[in-house]
Amino acid sequence: MATKPAAKKAPAAAKKAPTAPTVPMSKLIAELAEKHSMSKKAATELFSDFVELTVKNLKKGNKVRLTGLGILQVRKRAARMGRNPATGEAIKIKASKKVAFRVAKDLKEAV
Image (cartoon, rainbow, N blue to C red):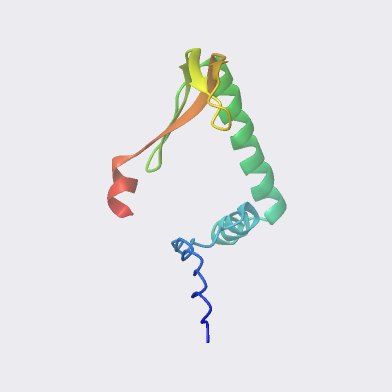
């Protein structure tokens, strides 16, 4: 009696580290509004203005220091050569600007 060859087992899927839950901005705004005895609408407007000012300053080329969190700044990336991972073909990547965040020492140590 012939035996069937053992079926090959599929490789075990790589175990992913559990991800931390994401806290939505609305929850942060609600907590700030409650803590500072203001309406959610006022807190939302305040935060929207903060974001708008941050973007405005980054567009001007200024760094934005958020004490206790870190520094946001725009960095220029030079044009460079890259490779298409599917074909291996060399491609030219255009110069661009990216927003970079440098974590504050206090935050690094707290986490």
